[in-house]
Length: 466
Image (cartoon, rainbow, N blue to C red; front, side, top):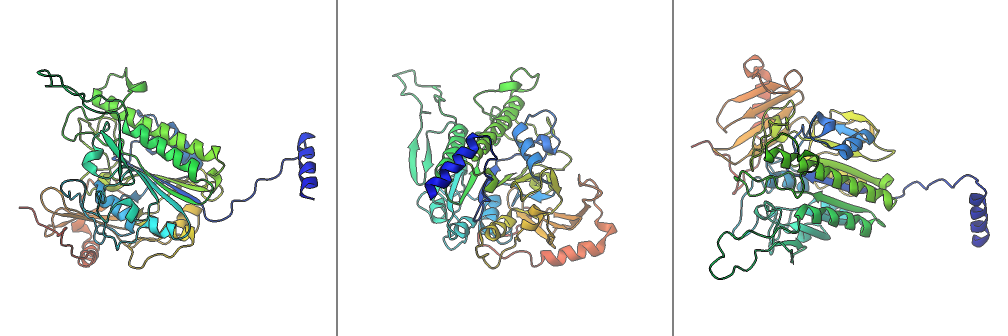
């Protein structure tokens, strides 16, 4: 009987009859989360960029939803990623700063931490992280394999990730040698010999992500592509925007660093497009939620000038600031048939919302004690509850800083004992006018919240400037 039905179907198709309708995807969706490094709120065309070309991400925004009021976990890398992985803001998440551990890597996530990868793995997802980790070095409890990831490829440590032509990358905990090596110097002429730059790490990371989708598309998968561009290489140098090809920017009358910065973003855009094409090719695009964002605001490192192409758009501040330009980031979401094409959301959420959202998508259990909430309703056009407060703290530089968002209001405190600056983001997105003296009742409510917003940490205490 099955052979007869198949023959009839083939005959109908050969005679020009209607093709069978595609089956509705069954089971939970695949999740592709793309987090790039130091991309500003204003660096994409869909967020107002005029000079840097990002056609594939602009098309992604047109096919899905663009969030206008979404925030990173922190204003620098490790705590931002910790907030993402744990569903807790920087007053509660285990990693609240870029604390380096000798001889290699950052302070590790504790083994007892429940990560979003562990929640998804428990529901049958194949889990992968490709790119930059920064939450635990080899041999520590914080490595991706101990935090719910079946597969890892890339950089385990942040300082290692500042080099786009490294001698090795990691596959899980194994060092994979690359061809970027310093030639053996001949006797007497070894001084000044440069590293031979053969394999650009971003190219390898992008291809690994494509290969992961090729391997794992048969069942539900979660892939976190944590690309390193457009972060600078070798912080503090003036030639740190390193990319193999300046492309369409080569002939621009711009500083070389700005050509490199723009070329990195356009390369990232091209490779996001290649990954999206792979979803189409293997037939899973309609059952894949794609999310694209950045780990914090734009940088002023490696000779890059974030003002040159207005990388923070209308926002004040950059990376390492708790003003909006340091923490408000692009978020684009696409899920055909579920997320409305060409839509915009002003839901004020943050990285700690990803874990409960993914748990709801997968039908998994959301751990208790989280600061995040699911924003699946916002994604799918439903009634979305708002956060009463969003909270950040930052521990680099001279003392600790804190920030709070409460509805239309944004509070910034530049030291634990200092005054709270207050901004009305509805009228003043650029945080130009401190209105604390005009709204003492709002300041008082924020101060009351700040008194209980965090738990003490032996590694990250609030410290006043010296």
